Image (cartoon, rainbow, N blue to C red; front, side, top):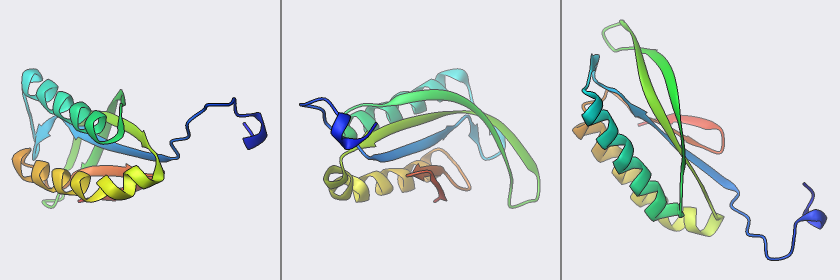
Length: 120
């Protein structure tokens, strides 16, 4: 869609952000209840910071520090933000991720900004 064809009154949210919510603690699968709590907390965060979210189920894997292949289910929670809102709220978002890395017992947590993957 070109700029000329955007309907009057349309809002643009150009910054795509996403958090990959893991269903494990290190290499151990967590309960479905615990996983749903993580998803709910992430959806709440994204809604509070950026106004809403979309989530999709995922399956992924990685090589752990002990050189084991870890395959896990996950949920990707995606939000779109206005550039100014993202700049203002980015540090709060990153700090939340740092805390969740510890409380969720993760070697790292994957997150995406504008189709670039990062690990914290």
